[in-house]
Image (cartoon, rainbow, N blue to C red; front, side, top):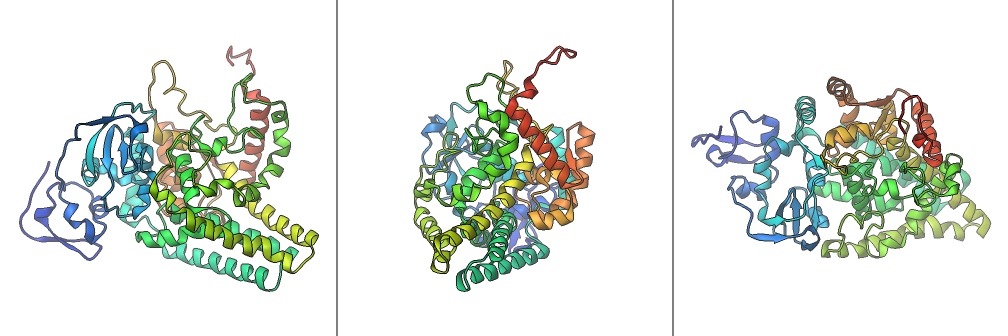
Length: 493
């Protein structure tokens, strides 16, 4: 029921007072947390009144979207003049269908989807949208309803504990980085610098580049550049990581799953698939050593020159002026990083010693980061092809929420969260990617309970070594194709 009141005011948590007559669409039964999430900045006040507008007559294919357009489901929205509460990062996705990205980041918007979408200008329809995922299942509704009771949407940002943790790791890296540059590198400093950079990647930039560190977008923008200070790129990372979240373990669209090919397979392709090579039979042995080159492949990756992530550009269109405008700052920060971390040791040591120290630092960072990331979705029992039903004869979309749970794992609890930035709770993180990592240990018991109620498989390892064993087992079996062996007793492959 829609109700209009003309007297009184409603004080928002952001210091603004809105006449209740302006809350035309706000349902009387709408949860307070949802109402709070509607109101973000003073600049948005004028747009808070829902004015239904049917999509314009424009008809085009997704590939024909301009950089000022995005599509959600089949509706095209023009974002050129859109005042996004989270900053202009939304323009990075211009020219794309962002159905999954929009719905996963704005979890609370499903409480009143027509309200939030009305804040953008609908201009037409795409003619070739074919969903692989479905939204709004009873599992999703109950999950959101119960989790929002624990962490209301307007309170899902970084806690004081998060900022204490971030400040500690930033200070730690600043000190070690200063010692590396001022006093010169050493084996000990190299080890700790590798750890420090990994901790920034896990604990600082990750939350920030998910928009989860603070409701103030400039804080997320600033902390997000932590990716550049550890040898990565804020914008390239968002391109890859948000695509990974949208299509986790998708056999064609998840850039993380494809990133190591052809040297190594994360995807479990059928036997006889041309992407399988003889050396994959041994990837269980070289899996970890290969991950140690992650730093090298990141720091000296030529894709920084155009900021079009190579592993996702077949899925997303990264050709827009917003991305082009970020190339200069990305190159400048990479030059600074190389000067501090790669060039400076050669001024203090001979070539062999300098290379040795850089190798230690890079190997520690690589294994710390990529080793932990690889545990999250590559383990025995993980759903490695969640959209197989959508590609079948019936073409039935799969429940996105269910797919996030069954493609991911969780291990440990609070201690692991402090080290990994909450990424040990991958299931919780994938269900609520814009929630601060500080909350994942808190909501995990309820998430497990709801999954059990709905028959959704929740992979939880009380100890990290159990997840490690499951990952090594999976990598070996995926390499040799043993999951595809004929099972005579079951009469299936």
